[in-house]
Image (tube, rainbow, N blue to C red):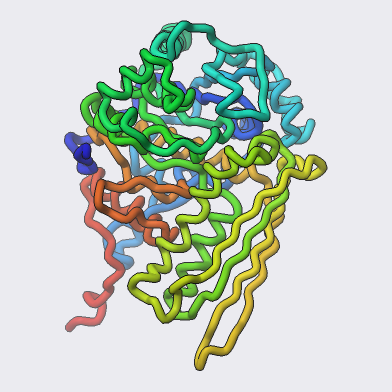
Length: 443
């Protein structure tokens, strides 16, 4: 198994020059993200939901009163230095794609229409058998998957030359692919590249983007539950190439709520009998997930959260054999405005039953867009700080975080937040915050 490097190798380099953010996928999430950044840059909106732009970080003792904004503490790329690019099997420019996605209203799109129309997707690496509910004509042609991956590498180089970007980050914003189990093709980089040459079905398009990004020295963030950098082959390649990688599947709606509520149940030692979750969603993601093979990939990502947080092996009296059911239903009238229902059956003192019910009417892409921004900025910062391989401190943003071999990834949102902020303090030479507080009461 590959080693994991998570400590700083150098003082962080400044964020000089332009940062390119490339998104495989120019649908609802990507267009909402791009439009939002441009809207913030023009002073038309605020970056609500983004830790890098709006959150503070406490430094030193509480009595010192040092709580700067993260963006003022850490040398992140400035929003004005970001340039955008994308791949998509549908050739619509970002403005047209955003209009079709139906997330943003006309009052928000029209003031930036000129900017959005100028972003035209590059031909994508796409095969219908991996995302059966989508078709597209803006697709690369090649004899082998290696040729297609090399074409993606050339796209990255051409994008940097065209835009003047000094650094690039890739954030997957495309659809969920069919479920693929890790196999011998993913065990070593030699086996992976041989499988590319042989057009092996175990090598999905998203893996080609991940390989191309790492080969070009670009951090890779996976916004969907597809198997990609969570394989030994690509993890080792990321270490060898000095590239940060992180988890998969943006933690936006229902799973985000689980990582908030489940830690609360465990903190109070309340038992769990069952957790039933269902969603209705009408955007392109919902249509793709209507395919059972794609839903299987998403289901695996969603189901892992509760078990990891509640640790039934340590607390069998409270959490052994709890029932966890997840459903996603494609319902076109809902569009991007996803609705999630949760029914949570819990047990309290003397075994008495209680229930929690959650009805979350959320906007999927509105929740995901600031995650794209934060992951891109923090991954770029990690690389400038000499970080490479798995960045467990970015688990905060994912349904399926990655951790070193043999380690259980952390799913508790509040532990993840502490890990993220303590990593920033560490990289910037500040003391860790333990929240012990005894020093205030010692004479």
